[in-house]
Length: 449
Ligand code: GAL
Picture (cartoon, protein in one colour):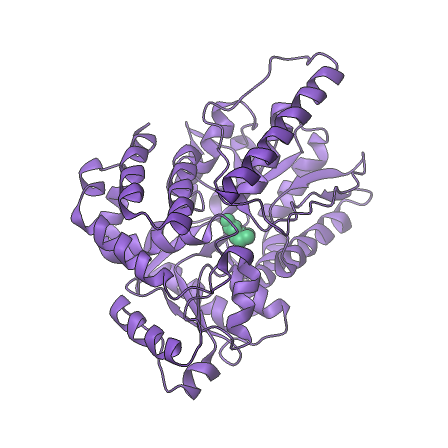
């Protein structure tokens, strides 16, 4: 209820601002382009971290919009920007990261700019179906020719190239590949307690009970950031259905969404959340990850941006932190890829094309990814620049089965992503299994479109 009230106030403010901006602005030169499936805000409260310091925008600088606000995310982006500014003297980037750590807040903010015909030059969008809404709304320029001219098609894995094609065209340049089905833990804490990281959900609950008996919350998780609970659930779906049926689920097989395994997956989530950080609604994912590093909580089930975060705090892989697959998903790499496109009507089109060249280059990706905690989208990386975890991930990507993430835009159009995210965020607060099942069934229609 409290969340709902905060959301309503927030929405009213947004509408008022929008009306004010419309009243004050010149008539738009072209008809407004509104996405056919504009993302909806979740019921998660806007992040307490989203004090959204309004960045000063240098009118000569390329405007880059993202939700990368953690130290590692910023460091990785800065490393790439430095290469760009060195290779194209005089060029600059305004980093417009939304200071919230919440993907859904960032989407809302981006939509406000797009709807008032004031696009940044580029914005973070996951490679794959997530771009569909922007393409349908005519907000991205096709980059197929540019992509070929730069030779990017010769250096990226076929799966990614396939995923990038929307209605026969490529619209974004991928920077990386992240893995989301990972369990991060502090090896010293496990050793002290004579425990090993769980490989199945049964083992997870055994381990969780032992930590609970010692007063240590087993599952460090954020219910604030709007994606962590949904992300945990997609990993549970993968474990419960296996990679083949998981693929059918995301392809919109309605009968599978009514399968009793859905009840089992919901029950597993429900049980896991009983071991969640007691203040999970008040912390973002970086805080949840840090608690595991500091030995205050036991396990963090999330993507390898956690790796980048740990390292940015000075931690060492296999000493201060270690990893395993999310229970039940060994041998499957749930993947996602961050990418950037070129806005239609980009205020700095030529500079932006130069930035995209750097983003797709070997040098750019080898500067960005070792800091970000992701492997490069290119296949010709200098492996020696990547740490133990990332070298393991590079090998896993080649030998594992691959499953696309729903929550991080690889598997499903954004209208589905948001319906899925909203259903899981509601569940995180109301714990209503029937309502979640119903919402998931109703959302399938968005997968069939
Ligand atoms: C994902 C994104 C990652 C990381 C993460 C947490 O959606 O792809 O790069 O930023 O969110 O912020």
